[in-house]
Image 1 (cartoon, rainbow, N blue to C red):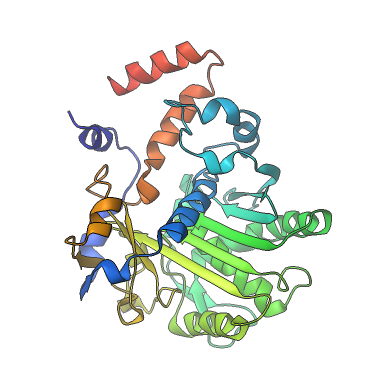
Image 2: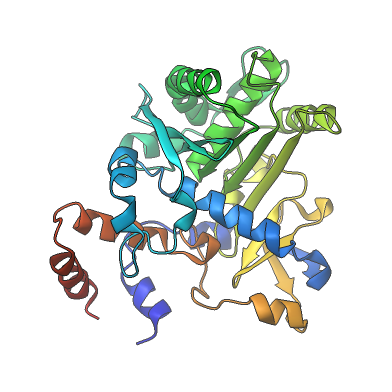
Length: 348
């Protein structure tokens, strides 16, 4: 049994491949070596992705940082999550609507704020409320009703932790990151911060790195976001946006365009077989791409560990396995017992 077949056989969380088939559009553009993202940028986004992944609401940020030296060992839940080492958890927070979780961490002179993807039934109910409602203070901008409700419940808590950290630490950059619903929370918070020009926050360089972000609002909202980015180009508080969508992940295809929804990123990235490509702006809404694999650089980077793709396989990592093994790890402090339990659970 191959490792990838084994992983797919243990899937219990939704990977939204069905949504990709139903709503995903096939691009006529073939991605090639010229579209490959530089290796150092792909590595940086993979490292930021580690912070997005451990924000999941089934995990405890406090527990993770308290146990990092053990968790990152080979065969343990966070093996390979080395970007977390050397970082400091400042504080976690939880929203008042459906308990949306997030945290703020410090890594060197970066502040990283991460939001959880969907992690409970009440969040799922809000995710399915795809009515478009007006975004207060933004004429013509309409936003996903459920996402706005979730964000409104966590905004104050997230802003308080982030502002306090900015006042207490030397900060050169603020990084916003999230997977799935967490990505939507990042965009809504940034729209709020940047449009209101909140002191201390809007004056710093910002990087937003999202993974599997759904569509959040109408074209007017998206145009407002792109206008904000354009207004910061060339300034000390420039905004770097990296929106990654993965092969066979249907979440970036929903809600569908025919309901008036659009993606924020003008030129998103596409993750497939371990390679990261920049999508031309003309194809930003597309979900599937042909990929030319005849370049030496593609073959050098290629990683076929998870060939079926899906919502939980970004950055060549299996996010569901992290949740599964973290649950086992939290029940015992004995390493040998933990490894035995993993062996039994995964039948390897």
